[in-house]
Image 1 (cartoon, one colour):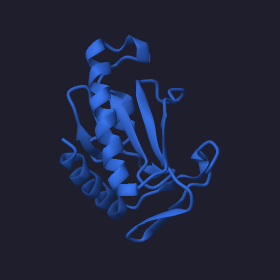
Image 2 (image 1 turned 120 degrees about the vertical axis):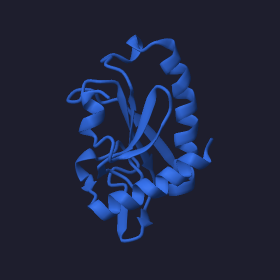
Image 3 (image 1 turned 180 degrees about the horizontal axis):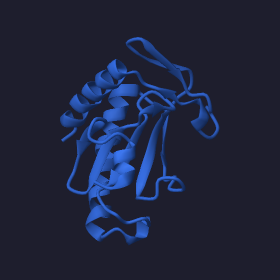
Image 4 (image 1 turned 30 degrees about the horizontal axis):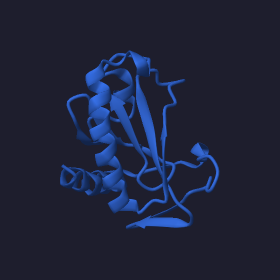
Length: 145
């Protein structure tokens, strides 16, 4: 796995994977259910990924959006490719919603709604919250096959 994938906590944050992509829990939650979807590649340009990565991304997109619909009941979804600090191909996937979403002891509002996401409002998860989210999302990911 590349350095960007490891920076986002792999393997401890792994929710699921396909042949060419990993789905990771974003350690700092901008909105409830924030993820990182990263290519299993050393490429640093989206267009440089081989065709099979792009074909596989269609399946990843379908499954991630189905998983987050069940988990979060979002109103919109943002797939942000922000490769300024972490150079390998990856997306920050942010379910967007008006109001709050709650999971156990964590309540998160979408601080940027209805405008651009407020990345600085992200909340770091505790170890127990992270384990809960990974199990929750992992079960939903497995059910999307």
